[in-house]
Image (cartoon, rainbow, N blue to C red):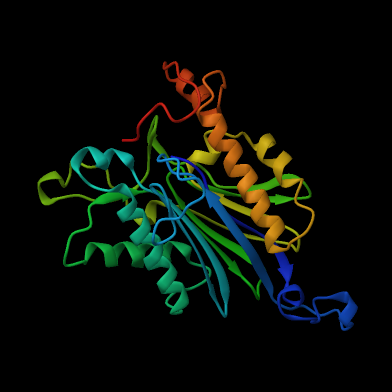
Length: 293
């Protein structure tokens, strides 16, 4: 699975929509809302570099960015590639899950402090589809409450997020694995396979809440990033980000995704995933060489 990046530098509303009290040049020095400037890039295993399938999918990975008057919301999901062996397109599940989350946010059917609720409602809608949607996916939802200046997160599996401040990681998600290369995941299986296919509840997602500051960088990604690039490499790329305009953020997102993609296919590179594999008695390099349960 290769990286899907959707990250933003927090900026005052003044940057997005003119001067306000959040900008010291405006005087007043009051509070005010925060907002996100976001960009994304990713690579699927079919090598269609940076190209999105319908529904914001990179290969088997999917992502969304949604805005509501109360919050900005980011999400990423990684479709489980093992379903391809059964004639199921893994991107359908992850893509539909993320599109449903996006719609719920835009319709205001969520509480900013409860990102697990977004995931739960979306998953329930998939379960209720008249035509069964088979598949599995990890998921990470990040909600910026613009008025309280707090970030609320829910992470199920081995997708995740980083919050970078002053060139250092100040918050990061915890990876959830049942065992090596088998992350927690949402699943819908055919009736004959229920109880056999691994399936976790959205309530099992790890949830956190914390304050954010202007200038923080929020990076969300699937395991294709974190399995191929250790934090210090990611931070080296993020340090090149000099301002918060979209073009600069997009360029940095592409640079990170391209580096992760190249490292995944380097036979001599000992990636974080390869090191984890060695710790579990396997001899691999990069991340592309192993499938996903």
